[in-house]
Amino acid sequence: MATDTITNPAISGGTPKSKVFKNFIDGEWVESASGKTFEDINPADTREVVAIFQESNKEDVDAAVDAAKRAFAKWRLVPAPRRAEMVFRAAEILIERKEDHARDMTREMGKVLKETRGDVQEAIDAAYYNAGEGRRLFGPTVPSELPNKFAMAVRQPIGVCGMITPWNFPMAISSWKLLPAIVCGNTCVIKPAQDTPLSTFNLVQALTDAGVPRGVINVVAGFGPEVGTPLTEHRDVRAISLTGSSAVGRIVGQIAAKSFKHCSLELGGKNPMIVLDDANLELAVEGGLWGAFGTTGQRCTATSRILVQKGVYRKFVDDFVARAKKIKVGNGLDESVEMGPAVNQRQLDTDLKYIEIGKNEGAKLVTGGNRLDKGDYKHGFFVEPTVFIDVDPKMQIAQEEIFGPVVSIIPCEGLEDAIAIANNIEYGLSSSLYTRDVNKAFAAVRDLETGITYINAPTIGAEVHLPFGGTKATGNGHREGGIGAIDFYTEWKAVYVDYSDTLQRAQIDRPE
Ligand code: NAD
Image 1 (cartoon, rainbow, N blue to C red):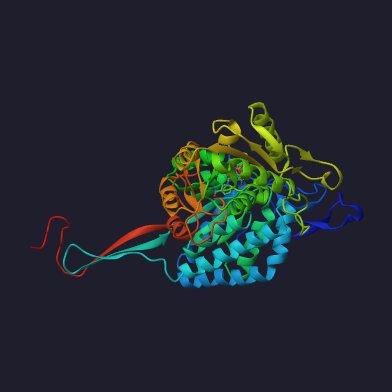
Image 2: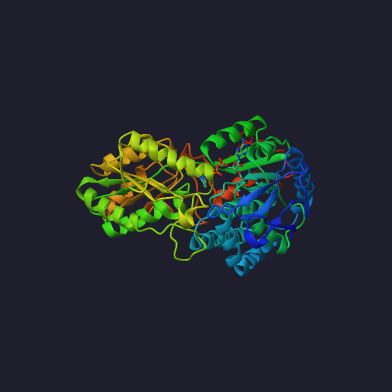
């Protein structure tokens, strides 16, 4: 691969060494024009520099877009089933490398190994799904309103696609964007999140080893304003796909609008889980814990509000809090650990800030609330699993995305009340309902204003072949996953073939 290695001075004995990754442009590993680099740090032990990446700038973006533009001229003409075969081969390669990639990911972003294995698996699943799409890419063939005329619509690639990703699903989210884009015949420039570039480089290495030609995928590491913005502004980038916060989504969306770029925004969430009196309470407690504290609460779909009907409120709270207290926090490389650190100092500060806000606005803190910084925790960004109860739905901790292991439990009267509280929020990504009443379940599916609803499961757990995304401030109406991604990465062309040998004017020459 990329790279030189340098000794990591922070680790005693000088090992392990930190790899220096260059940018990947036109099939070559190249240094940034800036001459600067930045460190990818392990959030469980900040003394460890996992790898070093280029701190890129506009010049690097321009070079990558040029390469992608040149590659597009050939790649769009490669038959889609051939393109898809390369993606299929990448899936097989990722299976072989799964454990190594999962370990890299745990080191660069902190989530526990069983979850990072799941993240790599999601890229494998996305590869198989999109490889299959290479033999479909269906479009409608319809009867013409005129005789001796043929009518159909075909999908065409858009051109160079820019991609900007967050750090919480560093391989999965890159795969959701890159794989459908290239199967559809586009070429790509991706800017991975600055906290977790390694996992994107691992994915792109697998695709390169699987035969994806030079220039089809280019990776430019770096920061949002220096790389993400010029990528969004570039006139030769015809589509831009961002997964990130709603604040950055607003910036990217506005820039993209100026040049009429296709623009897909997958943004924040504040996801409610509703527990009714008739629910399987043990299942709901277990699901709530997984939804709230899995990935240290750093999922866009994390269960951050739990709305519990009054009849089971006390019992649910007691059981939930007792179990939350037992969650083992630590370095995700230890198989017995259940919750890793926050990804960086900024996220840790945000978690602690919201804990203070919750206390100040009168929510009852029943467990957690502190940074862990002694002993094994000394060098990491660890925070306790934190539960607030008796939360008023209007409180800031119940309205704003925290993106950490802080959950608000809110009492409610019943389904109608719960749905009103659930919907009274800026976001609309995921929701869930625990009940044994099928009528209530289907009413909730109809009425919850989110892009995803789970019944008797927490708000997390998306599968790659269904649409993924949300309503309101969670996005701009596009979906990743499944056929939604194929829709985003293709443009429709309507094709009419008139074999009548006469001029037939639509809507005018109407046959009797
Ligand atoms: P972020 O918005 O800070 O950053 C996302 C990406 O945007 C990064 O690569 C960043 O470098 C880049 N960026 C930052 N400023 C930019 C600018 N001015 N122009 C262009 N690019 C810029 O988000 P994050 O902290 O990496 O991730 C957490 C957020 O992502 C949360 O809000 C979470 O809900 C959201 N998220 C959403 C989904 C989804 O599918 N809806 C999935 C995962 C995460």
